[in-house]
Length: 173
Image (cartoon, rainbow, N blue to C red; front, side):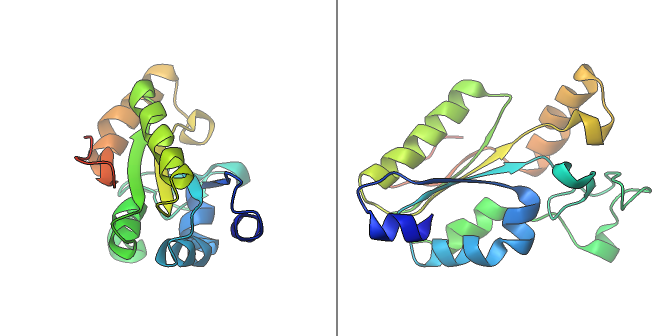
């Protein structure tokens, strides 16, 4: 994506990744793009597990959360605490970057944050990053009510929603 943007700067480029890929094996790409203030938009989906490979613990798995590789729940003393990517990215980027965390439970806010990220790229300001809290009922082994409750009561409490950095004025919470 960065190569495409550098060779064709007039294009709008959007990268889409999961929390495992973005904060684990692909973290160097995310951080390097942020530090270089690449004029791209990255959307990272945080569902607190490696959802596409069987539900193993991810960098964002919450303390006490059970996964295929943490059947008794994540123990932060053994495995560390969940990664808070937007907070980290916001520290690495200049004031022209856009960094936010949204949730699928607040659809209109999610649309606004993605719109702002794209606007930031279109206006040539710099790096844009939106983490989106999402669900994974299959690997969480939850019904619809339990899924929504986990997203809103657990995830949104641990991962605060809002704009962490914006060149467009006061950030949204």
